[in-house]
Image 1 (cartoon, helix red, strand yellow):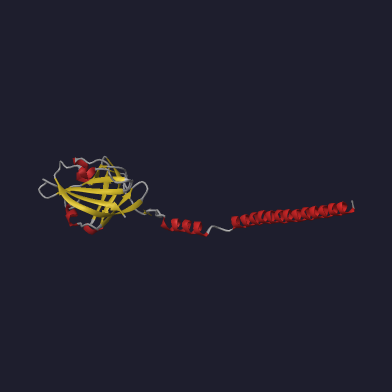
Image 2: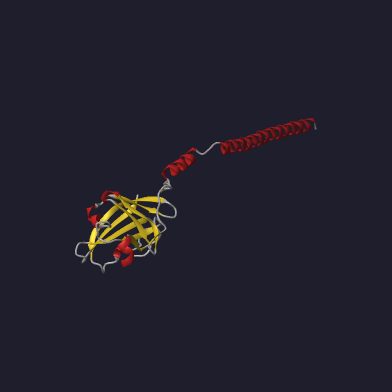
Length: 213
């Protein structure tokens, strides 16, 4: 009996040691898990407060790359009449290279073209689209338009807004009067101007096309 009890006590002690060891291991594991969870939470909070460098740099690059739409010149001191004869004045065409400063009338017909240049087709002055102007090949009108070259610059002023927009010539050519392709509005939403006058003899037309710069 004594040997039996001793063996039983020894076995019980061994079981108790295993339980203690197991409890200790579980405690260590539990502490490790809690530590990892707390550490990750702290890091996550700290990361929220730290700006994303790559994202910030991308935003800066986008801000730099984004085109800046500049306001056009406002000419508050320019005086443009509201009418010429029975015609409304839309604005003013200024081609400094050939000494042209003409009010743009709202209708292109024989009577208006004797007074000045006139709108033939298109949107408002300096609005998005292809604004087409016709004028006689006279000394005080567009006689010297043939002296203009690709790359030359002129501008228009809107009478109501008093805003000035510069245009640069990108094409000049001659066509027959029946060719109306110069009036096309396929401008991709940009501002364009087309100047039209007769070549000497009146059998062909001189076309001068320009885009906003």
